[in-house]
Image 1: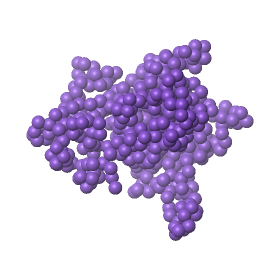
Image 2: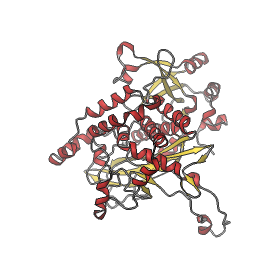
Image 3: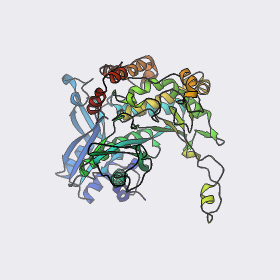
Image 4: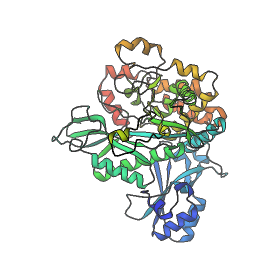
Amino acid sequence: MNLNPLVAFLKKSPKEFTKADIINYVVANEIKMIDFRYVAGDGRLKTLNFILTDLHYLEQILSTGERVDGSSLFPNFLHAGSSDLYVIPRFSTAFLDPFNEIPTLSMFCSFFNKDGEPMKNSPEYILKKAAQNFTSVTGMNFQAMGELEFYVIGDREDAFPIPNQRGYHEAGPFTKFEQFRRDCMLFIAQAGGMIKYGHSEVGNFTLGDKIYEQNEIEFLVTDVCDAADQLVLAKWIIRSMAYRYNLDVTFAPKITTAKAGSGMHIHTRITKEGVNQYVKDGALSETAKKAIAGYMTCAASLTAFGNMNPTSYFRLVPHQEAPTSICWGDRNRSVLVRVPLGWTGSNNMVAMANPKENPEIQDYSDKQTIEFRCPDGSADIYLLMAGLCVAARHGFEMENPLEIAGKTYVDVNIHRQENRKMMDSLAQLPASCWDSAGELEKNRAVFEKHGVFDPQIIDDIIRQLKSFNDQHIREEIANNPPKMAEMVDTYFYCG
């Protein structure tokens, strides 16, 4: 069963969609408009609308795309004197717009320059290069999925309250926005998103006449480029659904003190010929440990793509289920990189819970992932995924990855007082955008290797991060608490 109307109609997977398929669907379903969608330099989805006057015009826009003003979309590195770009639709991303009353088909686009070549600094193209380069270096494929956390904000109700910061997996009527989350999940799935599950999260509080409830939607593992597209799509749908519901939504990493912040954890998996390489003989493999070593080495600089405004660093503090130290562990939520439960045990749990089931042992090791836990909703999703791709590849190019993996492994909660000495021995994540920029500068050669990240885009990100001038932000907030509220307002709709 597939909820995507195009898949149901065309009877093929999205990766097999052709121009002829799109035209066939448009004609058969009386589609009136086409929307091109693409992510600009601010990380948000943009739209170009086409009204379909005849088949010739449909054929034309699908074949040639359209011109756009690149200097407005990417003002940091494209200038008005030479800024025209082409946006070319990617047929595999086509979906029926769930919000438009006029029957409308939407497609994500790629950017091309005046010579008809991919725009080298487009985040979507950087991710594509990173994925291809990972495969060429390692002979394996890099996959990913995201956990998208967000707060839903609506009018306060006093009936069936949830205890403060106890909203994890709560159900209605205690949680007030479960139906909203369900509707979001349905629309995301209909648009091609591969969802694993959704649930309420820890964070919940009331402030004035408003209630704030944290939610999470988690996706299934897929090719890293598709995983990025799905996160971008999901953020757009969740925001659009909130507008329809007369609610507000924020993906901001931190919106108040002493309450759970929102992250965007990224799970990764490496496969070869369809087989998960993170597990061997029921245990974590050397392949997994090499990737982890890459994450450990690049962790501080990866914040430049995954934690891109000052409020990110209000979340990355101890005792808030957010990482601060560069380390990894099994099922340990105090670490930066977590190896979650992976169904590698020998018991058939379904048969034990259901006596009528046959106790057959099956291999579910393909479900094992590795979770990178510091990113948040301020991230440039394509650059973050590209950075993780590069970091994992770096783990295979290093001289001593298994030694690094061994030195950075921990098996305790490092935020407990009795483990303070261990925490102090570990490298720490940056404390500000300014520090993050410095880490990217120190590690830029890793990201620029093989031509994945162009030096210009690295320069641009460093400049952008330093422009916040937040190198003393935690001290400034301690001395002037209202400043945090001002910054939260500024970055409330980040990413």
